[in-house]
Image (cartoon, rainbow, N blue to C red; front, top):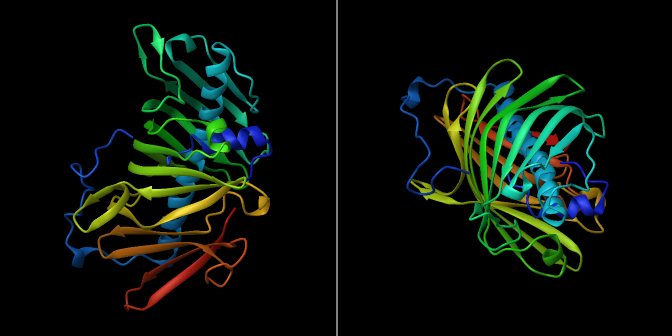
Length: 325
């Protein structure tokens, strides 16, 4: 996750980012459990396990970057109604229907750091009833984001991810950047239903049920993400769907993922310092532990990256440590 250069942009981003990331139900809509007999499923190779871990990280991170843009647009348009004060390279913001709660983000080129190229659009819709728009900072307000061929291409290797689908984010207790900096706790509930297409033509589906809590301690802002569903043996389920290999999966979060988004530890911003995510597919459980050093041990300072571990075909545990980008 990359550090924002603008204080305002960081503060806006932390009160809306969500993936991760909408539209799916909670405990009454359980993750699909594989109907494939476990004995028929071949163990994943190291390369496939690495791909799983990268997919989990990359899909969510790029989605979060889009949420940053959306939050900036909504909070600025809430002030100016028909104009936005933010400037993002190769992003145009259509606010012609802002009076009806609709804002469209149109992407056409490289980001300001020349790390990725983005195309496609994201349509934001705030509640609009009786000619009145409910602002995002209102308690209980729900913003719906529709992704239309939103494609992110990493310029270093030309790898891409394309998003289609929608997110719905509820500002449970209300508030925004100013309230957070004043000491309030901001709680968002996230629901999503997405189809993700990779550069080789393979696809995966993601349904998301998470909460995201933002707190401020002496100017150090922390975001904490937790799974929001309970069913079967999963008590902190956050994501489920079908991966790019065509297998159903469920992501459980036994330990919430936390990271700093603003504060004096600038080098550590957006690097999770704690959290455990378990990716379940038939006979292939992958455990991702965030906030480790280069040896895979819990980091005592700024974390190096994350470790993912699994059992190989001989029932021997394997693990790989990857750095945060």
